[in-house]
Image 1 (tube, helix red, strand yellow):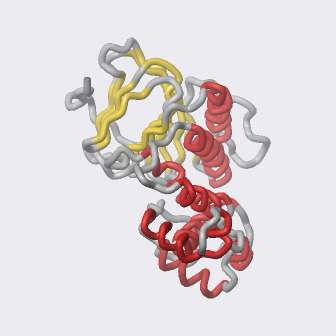
Image 2 (cartoon, rainbow, N blue to C red; image 1 turned 60 degrees about the horizontal axis):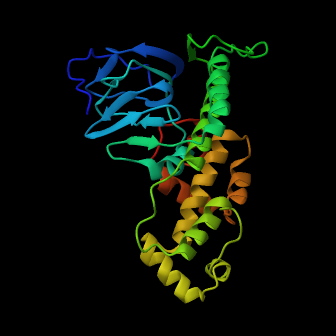
Length: 300
């Protein structure tokens, strides 16, 4: 049954520019209600018990091994599920990296609620270790070595740039591990397996010199037949899909490396730096250099 969180206390969300991480062990009666949502993304990873989360009109039940993500700006409520004795979970408030959007998109249940489940049990220990590392790294001052560990019952706020990026790197590992191994919804009926293979080739290595001909050959079709099927099933041409994948790849490189913009362009498959700057600005609203300096997540 849905949780009725209308009577739960409103809770202020952390400022959007910070990374805040903690672990809670809550009993029946615990709940949070934010009628205006939050300025940051909220990631929850359940380790025990059950919780119920609502984002707009979308709802989810969270059990052990479930990653549930709430996008900013939408009313949300979450609480220990009615009838459950408690809910144990890790949580993180932060600004999500743009490169995470395609990983999470298959698990979008509506209104910015992403339910990534089930994650294989064999990965739970590694994901738990990543959360504990995040909790420790968030306390790093940038002077000496980062703390080796931190008590699970602490809440840490990553103020400094180095601590924040370390914490986000651990969260990126968690998002990748869960999104890559959970059971995504089945593809729409009628999606050709050959088109899915071609799309996977583009996603796996967007910087490669893919062409319509090379992709068609990889799935044993003529270029014209391949382009017709791909466009019909994905709503965009193979080359448009490739450009989008290259732009996402470039955004990730800008976030996580100190490569020059020209080298990012080349590594992402763009022959012309001028062309790269133009299409990147069209896609993300800012040129690559300004994007690297920081900005809000842009849906991809």
